[in-house]
Amino acid sequence: MQKKLNITTPIFFYGTLRAPEVRARVLQEDISQLKVCEALIIGFKICKVVGATYPALAIDPDAKHPITGLLAKNLTKTMVDKLDLFEGQNYGRAPIKVTVINDSKVQRAQAYLPKTLMNLYGEWNFEYWYKHHMSEFLMSLQNNCQIK
Image 1 (spheres, one colour):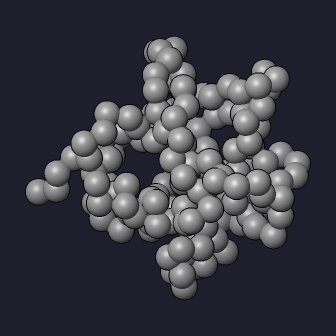
Image 2 (spheres, rainbow, N blue to C red; image 1 turned 90 degrees about the vertical axis):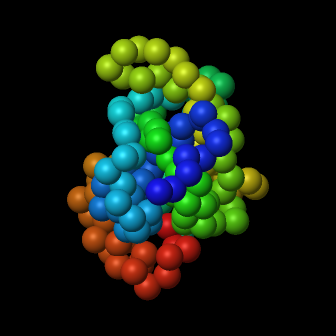
Image 3 (tube, rainbow, N blue to C red; image 1 turned 60 degrees about the horizontal axis):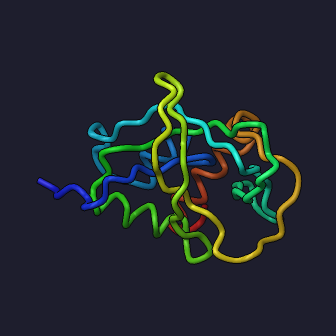
């Protein structure tokens, strides 16, 4: 039995990890204990990354449009280690506040944010990515576990 991570803060997935296929491939274990629920964040924009099909969050205090994602709870230390590896050296977990959609509660969470300035542009769209890029993305994960 795995120990639960000694952290009470869940992780907010805003990009490719919203896809169950990507979560399963990255975590490579029974993720039935992982609880996910829809959530929103405000004060950020979700942008495309130059040369990539995955997004990055950029802090934008003027942003009024919420970003939809999934709040993941019940993560084990092993799961978080795999997520950290997947996100790579350019992203780190940072504290944010999220609103859970079904109960409107605001709670603390973490999200993977770029550690340094990146070349960002436009708005990234999960549904478009899922339809047009997810299959290729999954293949890249099979070839190299660190590619997002």
